[in-house]
Image (cartoon, rainbow, N blue to C red; front, side, top):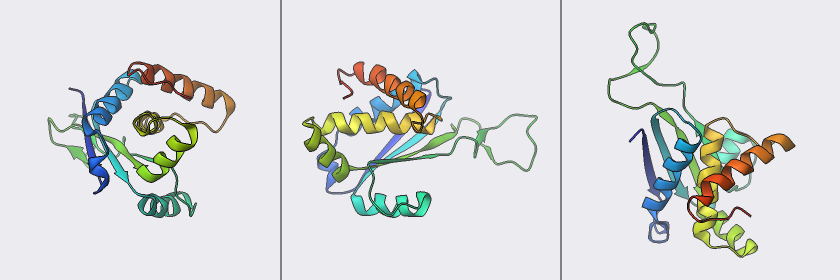
Length: 163
């Protein structure tokens, strides 16, 4: 498998989340977007943790639904002609693409407000986070349309409608 998705869920949220489904979804999103081989960490946490990260990395002191931290470029597979001063992974170890952090309580509130299952909201956030890791954004109208179109395509494979 070209992708290694590790899912960590804070207790007691671990009883409410289908880890295998989220990992499969992240792998499908990576493949659909043509991501290079590598690993992704997915963390399901609470509002306090995501607010702290949002404040520290984005300067916004409030919780959010999802944050993506891209790591591609920090570590690369070993290549013979690489300069010696770069960090090189041992052979057979995939490069890390990045980490996605999702607030379960934020997702639950959004799901309730939009009358959709929490599973579908988490699925959207996983796909959204993966696309951010791979350089997609939604600050301008054209970017938003493209990103949402990709989200729709990926989610449709799992029978989920993006609203």
